[in-house]
Length: 361
Ligand code: PMP
Image (cartoon, protein in one colour):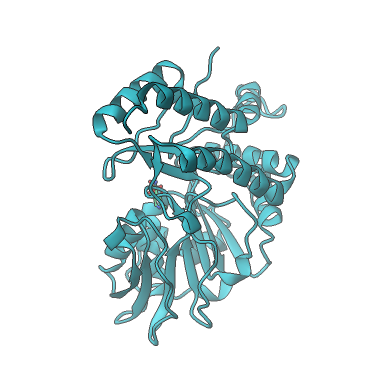
């Protein structure tokens, strides 16, 4: 068996120990005689899996009792609609910070449901930075941010003060990468396929007082209150994905929780950023103060050189390093499960490529 170093932005690398455990439990989950894929979502054995996933998430993120944890489907993209359908009253307004491509998409989708105030944007610099954050506008029903911008590689290093206006965050690409004060938020959502598990599950953490504010026409399946009342078992949830998430959470806990994960993530990112800062050929594209620990975009002079690098990298077992199609260049996504060794080896590869191509750069 030979595994590659996978720098995919999502679905992404998972901890090898988790994959091994899932493989060992594939045919017979803990003596139940069934795979988790085959069991009823109403069985006691699955109830324990989803219960464990929730309590591990509560423990790791220190989620207080007045927040609900939901395991949903539809990806983060569906949250772009669910958030306004559940939190934005008819004729209401909401603030959105346009810090990246996904942040802009969230605002575009919400615009179908009300007046969206793009309170700040960094589009003019190709989303290379987090824009200065204004206070919430007077009529805002909520204030939406994207804590890590997957495509252009920036992250929030501090949160806006929103007073009584609920702060809503898309954390798809940095949830569980560092400790979080969940009390600062009204609602947090994240697609699973980066730091949590396989694609197909979306996690929502929502403060109880925000439930029940949905528009009358909101489809039943898109109501947070329905999922909260039914502990994510209103209909058939993405059972297998929830099980893998439970294993990933156990793994994070076993490795020292989020404080330890944050240290590892800072160290890993520094290995690559230090190289980019001293390189004469490769250049990081995000503003230094706002650089993401999860997604690191960088460029070479010219797409031909990028193509040559990607080909070489792939042949050596370094995959999914191509930048997003909207921005080009290269991007290394180094989520929780990427080992430090993968980043070190990537830097060796970059150094070697530079030594052969740097002339005149
Ligand atoms: N938000 C962010 C920050 C993302 O990175 C992505 C996907 N890369 C999405 C939303 C969309 O997520 P999904 O594909 O799960 O709908």
